Image 1 (cartoon, rainbow over the protein chains, first blue to last red):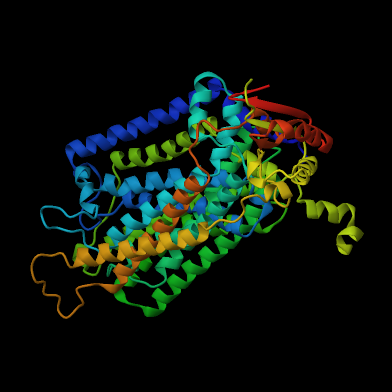
Image 2: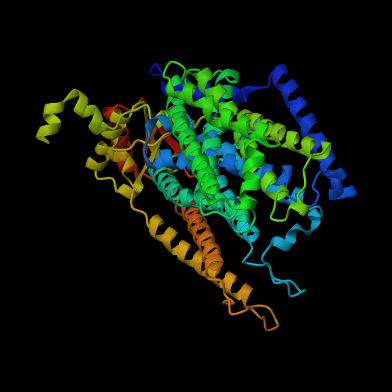
Length: 449
Length: 178
């Protein structure tokens, strides 16, 4: 990026907030339409009962739990990656962090809704809350589903605050440039920020503490999601590899989602001078590492199952290798490894377009992976007379499509009300500290000091 | 005659702001009277080193301990709350591993919430009517000033800030800069 003045940075990054185009309105209306269709499908399911879904014995977890795991995994894009880059003091992170943190908050909210959608009787969701009810029934602390409640809520609260805190100085920036009702709203959310050294120090200290806290929380969240499966004696689930396998998969899909979001933002909001090829190059390398790690985990899991030759596990193994789920399995392998690997490994192909294509494939592949973890195992449990199949209905497909559209819509709306790149962090990265300046201009004097 | 609430200078770059800060210190202005504002953090400059010390990390640790204790008690009391004797087949009534998970999550939640509360209290946010603010700060200017200057020092402060490179000197009377 050519050196920009603070005024140019402010002007460029606040430009997307200044109005909406007809094209934006068209896409927003289209996405909102699908989201409303999904809401109608959900209400239909609530009114009619869970029988309108494809969930039948023995497959009681289908699209909904696939989506739950997928979205929770995708949420690792933001807060975790942002926290790691902050702690590593990676200077190239500055334009990336907010794009990433937003994904976490929205993906986590959507993911957390799926267990409730899956309940069938969602009005009883409060049974999950740990409160002393008059029925004398306490939630079962031994159930991994209750661990989910604690982990997801902790992660959601941490992620929301991790996103909101560094937004306050930017709200103050918009407040000082806005007029009328906008000034009032941005003034309210800026909390009276003035930018004193005390405020800056406290904000940076708080962000540092939260970055330290949020990394183990993010790891615990997807570990606990994996234990929803691994704690059950179901073929191919009851495995110690599941927690790290899920965490690696979550980071993998998270980075892919982040690259995809950045590529779209760059194009649509004309942020070509801020989201640079180097950002895609660096994230592409991370994606490559995670692709290799993912393949390693899949290989280790499959190899151990194959050597064990335990009949119930082998039934699931073969049905995915060359049975009815084989087309999905091999599509997953192609999407997650065989196609992204050369794209990301060859420097010439690791361009913005290349990383975006690889990321799109990874997002598709990781959704398939979640589906293939859940459905083949449930449909091929220990007793062959209880084997079954699963076909999603229009209700599940509509709700799934609706959540993807909701995610994009929320992201679009967010980018119109908040600078999608942290203005103050970008500016702070532009100027050098006095010691570095003196070192560059008067090295002898600095040495003498 | 209105009593001035503050006199300040607006600087366009951190080096001149640092000179302004040094000029005020040399003039004998008490540090608690000096006010600095900027649109971004300027690490390494003397004017950004005010109020650096904070017990925030320690308070976060205390918050984590409190959260963890609450988590442990919640998990323990929940498991022991059944009003009838349970036959557990020799298994412990208080399951240690799940109790550990709940304790861990609430430890982290306690640390995070304490950090946020500490941040808000120590920065005195929200404060929608700050004593002194100039929107020029958002345009990249660095504000260095003195709160409630005496009549005797006002002129000297203004000239020292100008001498250090301030682009503008302003005095506030109530809410209105002049």
